[in-house]
Amino acid sequence: MKSFKLQILIIALILSPCLLFSQDFSSDYIALAVPEHWYGKIYHVNPITKTVSVQKVDTLRHDKTLLDSFNNLVSNVTIYNVKGEGELSIVGAGVSVKGENYQVIYDFSQTQTVKNNGGQNYSSFLVGVSVRMVAKFQALKGKINLSSPFSLSANIEKIKGSLEVRVSGIGSKKINDIIPTTSDLSPSSIATALQAVATIKSHIYDNETIITPQLLAYSKVNKEISKELEKENSNKPIRGKN
Image (cartoon, rainbow, N blue to C red):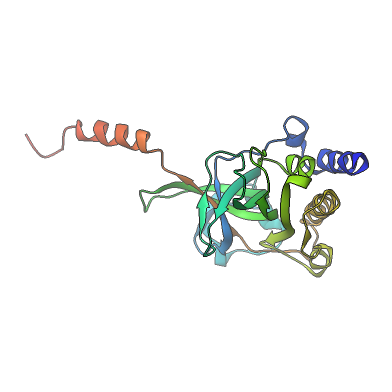
């Protein structure tokens, strides 16, 4: 068990600089359980001139040059409670309840933030590419910290389920061959998944890699902020009226 924990820690230090400072992932954004292809516009960085312009995704080259436009590196966790019919609901606290079923998404993504100007429920989206670990399990005990794979490894005897690695928006034969098969949740499978994530990330900039931007996550509108904005706007004088 100790050797597995050491292996996981070494892989994590290689995987992402932000993990040097924290074993918890951020949760500002809620990951879609199934990412969707992004058909809209993005802020595009020209690979030659380094100038930025707004472009429709389908007019751009879908190769490694597109990655210059996705310069936000995010390690994000989203915790879903799974109901009997497979319905997913967001869990606010990152601590398990005994007997409950969970789907936890640990997302390593390269994105840009796209503001949502057409709706009231979401303030912004994360659009880009990602490699994610998805753990599906039942909590045999309560009060397990679900906010990082390291905690799952430390409490492996208290959970029962499976682990898989998913890639969104990054395609090549080499990457396809790296993705491990779905396996039972264990310290060994967590270490293997972390190693696969690190290896896949190292091949994102390969010449043969095809990049297809995905809608990965969204941020909910803060209702209190919305109320303040509505109040402020209602107090503003309307032009053209006395």
